[in-house]
Image 1: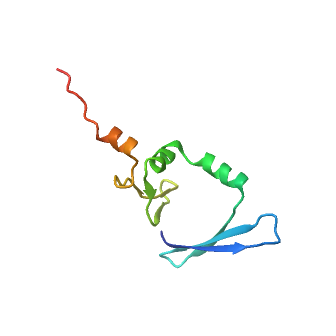
Image 2: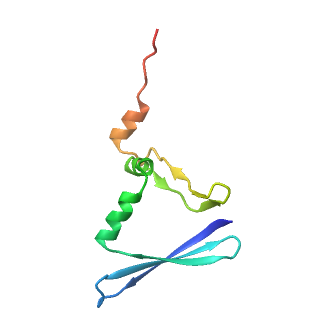
Image 3: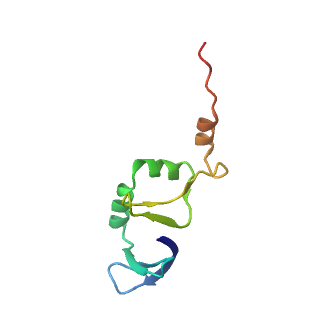
Length: 106
């Protein structure tokens, strides 16, 4: 089963403490769909940021981004995503770090 689409639905609620709600509809190639909801508050956003694994944070910090789609790998109980490291979007600091050459040991 593969995720074939994620459709965001932003709902503004002026009279609510929460302010905005973000709903997402996720569809698969097998015709299965489901809904998720994110409440946009600073507290929850900070908690979500802390939950991102350090390696993914490093990729995002260097200019990388997560590609479209994902693969549900049931054998390993994981969801595989593509992380693209576009050197055109990479900051100069990281670009210089990864382009450096190492001297040979003689």
